[in-house]
Length: 578
Ligand code: GAP
Image (cartoon, rainbow, N blue to C red):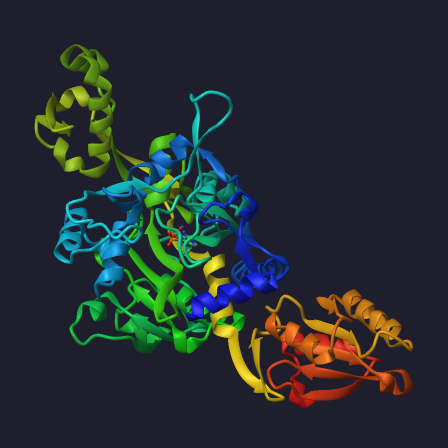
């Protein structure tokens, strides 16, 4: 069994996650988190919120998952959010064209290649349909838009889409959000929520699904002035696999500190570098194995339509690298597009310390001249003259001035433009913020954390499987067992379980089967501590506490047990210290 298969087997058996709606045959790419999985997911989300909202001092919002079509026209998703599809001429199955190439060759990022090249690769390598084995040579490779379409209200007059990223719910609300931040840059807005993509070939359980949770932060910064607090992470070593290294013949990953990465220009944006450092620490905290982790820069053809630079955090499972987070410098792409399409103001007014006096060139074109001269184009000519005066006042030095609109030239006598340069006093300026975006896929992180926590060893001559999850992430913190369901041990165990729950710990009570089997059950869901109530507990007021990874046991007083277990689970104390 591969690492992924044995993980999915455990996940189904122990209630982490399983395919949805299987009573009706299910639908590929949809998974339900069971009791253990939902608890783990909520712990990962809490740890994310703690780091990226609370500690960073950002705001969190919760926007709708369905948004009207104009949002996605503006964002570029309607036109550009595509994957490559190839359909088998024999059985009609559809596949991601870049993936069939990657699976059949040693090409790694086929996504970055043009469709025609992928089609040629399919033919040249004699690639066959993964479903029926027929040749895919000659089948066209086409673009397939990944958004799920719906209708808002009855009829078809108001199309909408399930959001393919939570980010758009933040961008469209920028005017309000900026007010809540008192128009002070920089500020960040975070969101944890569902995103939907009609993936061509869902695969590897949680890795490529059609409905998934993203945790995204959109950090709005003034590109001219704002700088990240780089010193806070300057010494963090990050494993970087840059685009240049990927393209070099003997290239490979380099371990650099965040400071070195910036100074050497390996990571161009200090903001992106800052978040790579912050996130490296966060991944360690939640249990990603740093020996199976790297940051990989996108190759030029691989970047999303909005990003000028992008790094992925990748984890290794089963020998494959999985993108778990994207770090993108989105520039002002999104806010400019939404401003252009909505006509609303997507800038921040930046007040100067003192008002300044500047020379400002303006025009006030004579419409009684432009109208008869240019007919229906008169207003566009007037707007173009205004923009030109602002951009290049010297264009008005001659007797005539020419503007270009849609490849056509319009020439106007300067005296008809009422061009003038005046001194004006300004108290501030409108700034279009740039966006730095760390975008986390919660499901892929859970998959990684579980895969990296999966351990086996031998206990009492038997093989044992356990999940070595950090106590903060474990779905259950303490298992409480009465040694036997009699003589008051059950009553005391229930009382202890109640006390631990009141103290805020996640507790499982288990009185069924041999004690060894109860330990194994908790080991398999990663419960870090188990408390057993035996006869001595009744007589002495002490219980045994067993630590998961070492299976070591210590006797501790019932008095103060909740406090001790809480300290263990937050890392304030170690089991060795007890
Ligand atoms: N707002 C930017 C954005 O959405 P992305 O790289 O397309 O960027 C971010 O997605 C993260 O979402 C990925 O790093 C991945 O962890 C997760 N993700 C994307 N598509 C997914 C899918 N089909 N199934 C599971 N997770 C997915």
